[in-house]
Length: 475
Image (cartoon, rainbow, N blue to C red; front, side):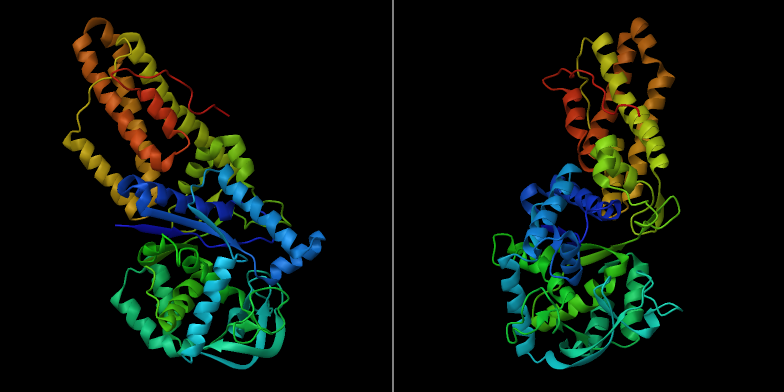
């Protein structure tokens, strides 16, 4: 069994914000879990940057840099940010790389040769912010793009089109045969409804684009950024030792780009004769203190800065436990601070420190011999079901509930008193508590990967516990 997880590839017209980090941390959490289950050699995790866009051209001009120098600098910043917050990606793709260009040309030519790409004239509305064409129905009452609050540009130019309309019935049949392919169910229902409303052919080239990948059969045209970008998931592993992962790919994406990933992308692959991904998951969005993130409001949060203050585990757990993956939610720094001090420092850190200190004091540092009882197996099965169902908040809630149970058991037994009068009874309690620490450490490899090695060190080895240490400094 293999697993291949992908995040969207991100525009490099600015540095990462906490919304980008949310998707990437969630995908990283899934990849870490499956590496535990299947072995690292059977899991592949891809992220990267989307660079062939007008947004990039505009950002480079604003920065006063040549486009290539700007792209190199920004891609390095994105990669460094993911490293800083603990993202364990296996590959980082840039859409300006030769390996990507080669596969874009190959797929474009294949689809063209099949007759599913043709030349025509496009006249319509184009939002540069979305890098997408818009219909009148998609605009607000003021004629603005709802996401970017501006009137789209009116374009008329010769373009190449993809016959998306020819795949309407095939897509509907695919979703009927694979009802769980797109999750959550609400996203699937939206996409099926969209397909049933009727599909139109889509433009897949730009004659006026200043930067991008030239068409293999017409170098005067550039491949439309979304058509090019979607192919990254395939180009990253095509013709490599990782190509076998393709049949096991799951796309983790934001709900705003499900039409590209769950309508156009499957149709492209059908046309090219390439097998479809195993699935897709469209997560929700969140506000900051009840307000949408905006530079003008000054509420854009840097994940690197949050990680520097609370640690990468504080950022990860604080974000992913705020609301269930797949739903919309809200996030605040004050909420994160309370969470960090109560759940991480006061909960997890306090439990590990107290138990290890007590084992040194009353058990001469001996690590209790624990056996996997049926209750432990049931607990692990529950955790597995939550993660495999992508219920990430549920998994964190379960983790912290387990911490609370262990802390309650420690307090109600007052084992430090019991150890002075009945060592045998105290040993039973210590064995139970040590078992909780083992299970929590197992879950932490997925949920708190920065802290998991410290927890393992505290559990010790060769019959002895390690030294107690502070896992989370109070803020």
